[in-house]
Amino acid sequence: MTIFSPSILGGALAAVGLAMAAPAAAATMAVQSAAERLLENAPEEAWKAVSPQNLLVMELPSGPMIIEMRPDLAPNHVARIQTLARRRFYDGAPFHRVIEGFMAQGGDPTGTGEGGSSLPDLQGEFAQPIEAVADKAIIGRDSRAAQIGFVGSVPVGTQPPTLPSLLVDDTVALWGLHCQGVMSMARTNDPNSANSQFFVMFGDNRDSLDQRYTVWGRVVDGYINARRINRGEPPTRPTPIVRARLMSDLPTDQRKTIEVLDPSTAVFKDYLRARGILSADGFVENACNVSVPVRINGEITS
Image 1 (cartoon, rainbow, N blue to C red):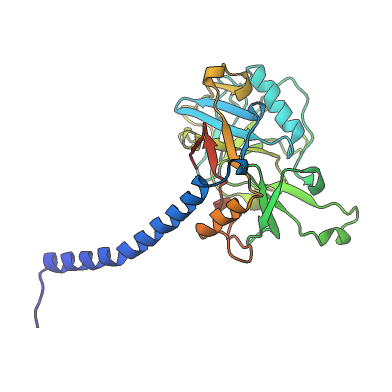
Image 2 (image 1 turned 180 degrees about the vertical axis):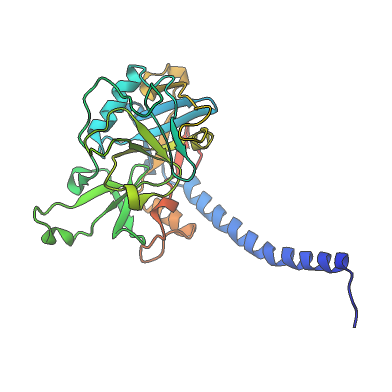
């Protein structure tokens, strides 16, 4: 019997491992290429431009974070963010509570978590009647929601269309899902106490936050800069918001055109199927694993 030396045996095993990994890597690349081709060949009408007044550009020390705001999900909260951004309220405000795997909370200029603006607190907008949200696309279901979809780039959940007959007021609700990159409003134990503080999600916390906190947008560019916010409760060196501006208020030469792939199109579903995310019968393992592709100044970025 031949006894191979450890170096020879290790080399042989490594070669076998590489040989086995190669087909898997090739298959992954083929899936990515097919999905990328779908996006590259998508008709222009499949891309929807986001209104510049509904884009919040939040400059952080590591770079900008661009947020698509959705007034159809939370009209009063989006109006509040727009007002405070125009007042320069957020400039210099630190992220005072930042928990790895959970979220980064900011929007209080005092940095204590106790402050807010002089404006009145807001009523919670935890869900909307589904018929009130025109720009929605239901794509299927996942392991936790009977129906999932998107409003722009924001993931949403809702109830099946057969449910109204079981409800007293025949109202079917639609709500934002607290997934990575989603923006939501902070509050006290009083559900109607949101004022200026907000948080950006680092992970999936749907079970504890959905329909309890108001989702008002999602990061469509620069999420990596959110990930660079210093951790802590509070952090030893809190990361400040350098400035927060509406895209519409920036000088023309600094503005970017942001488009999201219309999630109601066949292209979007084909893209998800090509990536192996959406099954033939409309099942997604977790809506938080789905991102709507984005174009910035005509270039596909995600």
